[in-house]
Image (cartoon, rainbow, N blue to C red; front, top):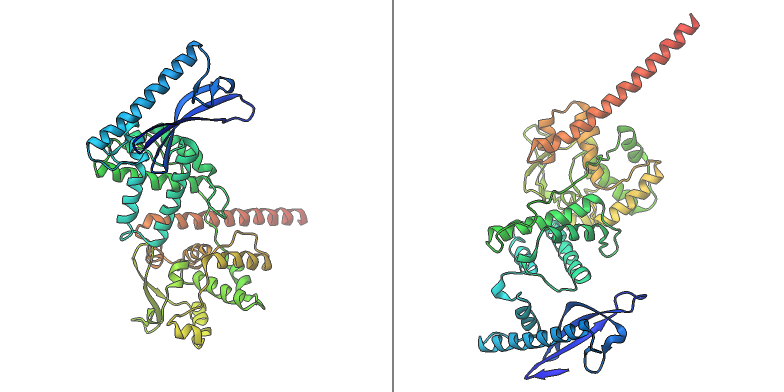
Length: 416
């Protein structure tokens, strides 16, 4: 180990593959007990490394060249240290390493600078649920940098198409705590969030070119799950002995008849229930996700569920209309409810919103413009996805009817 003032520099090796005898060579900068390491992108056979001298052993052409390179790195790190002292800059192991590698502040902002700026400035305009997803992406990016590049951070100017593709492959295997790996669309959501931050860097003039310019997000179209009227009736008519199951069933059914998402049901308060111009009971609220106003006339089944809880002391004390459970608990319970009712669908709370759009409204002749307003969609094209589902279902039903009629006519001909 060689020292100068507070700076110490150490060259060391790591074995990256168990069965290989090749060593990877690294440099470690230490100042005031804090370390910064980086790879020198050099390999050497284990028997040719002198652990005491921290240099290659022997006089082969490669070893002599390697030792000369290590001397140059050593000198370069001391020069970086000297420059920072002369410029009266903060001296840390990271700043010396960054100056030597040409990655210090003079070279521009870093990826984590961008993420920090985004997450601290956008929290006022983005909803908490959206911000939570950005924090998950931040953790994924940090793990990617550590696992794939052995870096804590990277300059924005070094983000290129290859970095984006490498990150895509990594994120497809990424497993946040307590979750399984990403689906295709889950991976694309991570990529989409990084792309939005990358575009922000361009607008801030932190980079000249967006590294995503040649990258295309590849979302797969998924079928929207919804319940048929028969399946919904099955759930409505099933009674559960466990009180929480019964209440969660009521919450789900209420959402099926109002089209409200989980967060909007959770945020419902007593003052959201009003008398409409038609003299009936309406819900006047806002969609949490978009701040779009919602004015929903209560269908009899939804009204019946509200009346069931109107004298519940806990709900009244909290000025709520319905019981409250976590989204995780609701979705877990709904899977048990589906199994108990013999419904072979992946039942989640959001299926209720899809059911309202399809089985309750569009299938019963409610105009798509009205359904769009009831759902709080900002674009009609979003609602048209449900219209296509209904159209497909009608087509399937008519095909079944035609097959049935053909069979009936065939039997009639056989009798005659």
